[in-house]
Length: 375
Image (cartoon, one colour):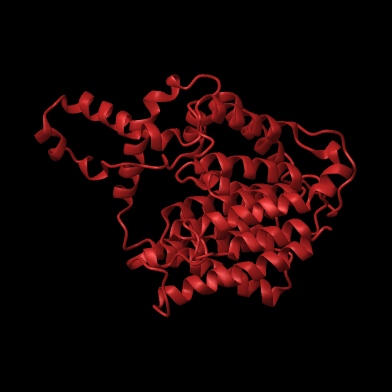
């Protein structure tokens, strides 16, 4: 059954259901749910491996959703499914070679579609870079998944590794996501610190990939993106103290955003509409579903206890980085992206995160010994 987590994640990455209201997220969430049912035998046999911290996080999500009546929020389903998937996958042993093949195959599909869309072969709608949505629904979502999952493919044989790696780098360039540069730089920096492979070649490869990714975003305005993210932070940050220990409930950002945004503009301009329209941030004004900073958003949604439990789990995985440095690099990439995006509110990213946590927790020789209940 070592293959089961990788199969579930590979299916999550490629499944799309155009007939659904949410053609991308809903089918992926359903596959995660089905995967949770399939892994129950492993959970039963290896319950001592279950991470307490992820159940604390899931509990915080449930309590917050109950207190604020937000069970209908899509964020509730995604956070619960993600937390339970991470916990369930932790009961499995890792098979790095098989995982690399399955995820590599899924990435060929995801990246191949992105490349075809970039060259106008077919689209799912949108214009410009937004047509490059592949099976994820948005170019930034594609970049997030590819930028993290590709690190699981390191055990592939060289010709296949070069194919998957090249397609992935091309996809990251075509999706034109600034976060890809930051995430890759942090992940590669982690490998350099861990001395994974010849440092000289790793350094050269990092510079080449960074140059390609920089070329991809050369037509976009970095400062506009930075200002936009900072604007979102300015709207949400003053309300971290409004969130009690249980938070304001999943989906709180979308629910409270109009009021929060009005507070910001009232503080800046009072009731002077001309002042608002003349302000350089006026172009960023509008309803938001997410803050594009998962750590801030999770504090607002589930409170410091839930967020702290998740951070504790991720830190505990990174402490094992020397066991599997390339999986750790993928984990670093996803954690980094969460500071400027919202991967922890998407089922595909949770699936990849779950598999990365399994891979990075493995022993140096690829095996895993029985161990007591984890933090």
